[in-house]
Length: 207
Ligand code: SF4
Ligand code: SF4
Image: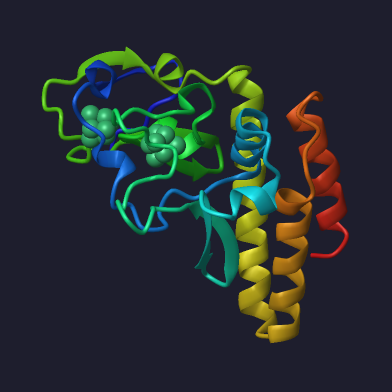
């Protein structure tokens, strides 16, 4: 598997997905949302987490951890943010996994790298683009640092859940995780990363 850094080029360009919305349909609960996604969704919709949970966001359980994911709509099996014209209605604020596709993330001791999901995108004539341009995330270095911290936290909690084998602990840590990183509204007028670091400090005390 070829691993890329954000400054590398990869075959990701798909002509702005013109005529295709396949990644926004039939995805089940696979488009997981991280805290930065919630901050962005809160910014663009004005809704807090409870509001988003009405019809746009679902709850997914993986390895004992409860995490929010985009909700496919019951009538269309498409994301609730997909417009009638088959375009993303929140494009500038779309979640990280939507930005990433058809790339995946790989985490190891050296940090975060990217890899191409070879047959994931239907467009066969994709062009080479710099990954940082494809992701189009402001302050990418801070975003990548956040992703690594978030990944490490989830891994640490997963390991602790497996070690403890305690329903009480699993419930407690999931409630804290949801409360601190998703339900407690972010101040969208303030820097996300500082708010995230404060919440990391708070959960570290109870892991
Ligand atoms: S948020 Fe936008 S890009 Fe992501 S699945 Fe929904 S419509 Fe598609
Ligand atoms: S399959 Fe490719 S072209 Fe279609 S929506 Fe996904 S990324 Fe865009």
